[in-house]
Length: 77
Length: 232
Image (cartoon, one colour):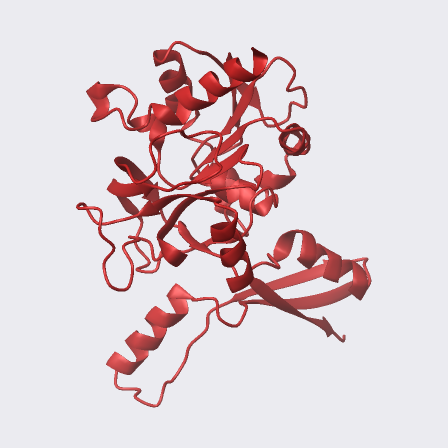
């Protein structure tokens, strides 16, 4: 059994409405040093699967390659 | 002429499509998402709703429903496929149409009639005079169409943009007129062949004048006329 942590984020150039809203809200709260906020997804998978297979899962279902990038981290026990 | 309207778990506009097509005098029947037999249907409609709760991404799970492999085959053979709202999202996830639909720019669910201009496109589903203004309601949270620059160029060059959001007088506001922030004010696109058409607005809701208009009628009548011509 292996554990993976997957981070899905919008590709560069894709507008991220929740991120932009959080950014404005933080600036409005007085955090004027905030320049950019991006919001993505965190997915944790426990599976009898190798990294290549998890990557395939991302391409097929968990991320949309048209708009999103993903990064997979293998969690060491 | 027989329309097939696919029901996914979480679809909620299938009955509206059935009613609209029957109102226009056509046969129309439900297709369960687990079915794989599309024989006997002349055109397929993927209705609006929240298939699989919109989990992961809108349309991401519905795309793998058993019926979708058949819908893809049907479309590849030139069969007419219409995706409305969630149906449009499913068509992009299934790669039958390019691009993707993001969360609305203002983060609000938008439900209101919108004015659109009919573009000069290759779409087989709509023969309304290019340049005409129509009013059809939208009802969505993820209708913010996007694609990369290369795809947008191809969509314009191949006349695949079918509908654009405009102001009530037909003009385009500085910064765009899409209520959801859609790229290039795109409300609906078709594939290169013109048989697969996806749009965010709901034409099935403006077919019977009792619900506020008839601008949605050509979205169903055009394809019937065209199929009749092809059949000779």
